[in-house]
Length: 107
Image 1 (cartoon, rainbow, N blue to C red):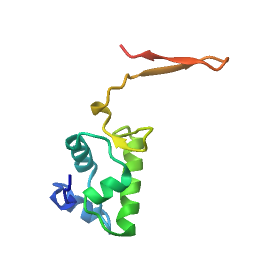
Image 2 (tube, rainbow, N blue to C red):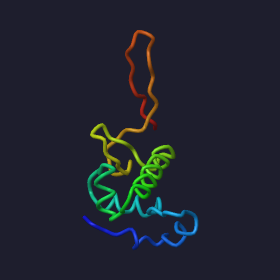
Image 3 (cartoon, one colour):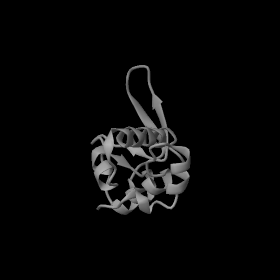
């Protein structure tokens, strides 16, 4: 799947805020939902047709911010995914002092 981020409806806003704009959060979320599978950073960089070290660094920072804010999750296969697309159970981890634990699912 190859899609230039110039189709991003928020590209103008990003260009006003950053010297080297990268795709908006909304565009990245929509792109990953349409992709159908988690993608690693390098695959996203190529698929979004970004170029240069500065845009790579910008994408890295944007993805890390999206992880921090809970918009994306990072899988054990080193890929980014939209949480709603994965079969995950939301809950609280309960740990025991003897080293074991479990998850209490949210109601």
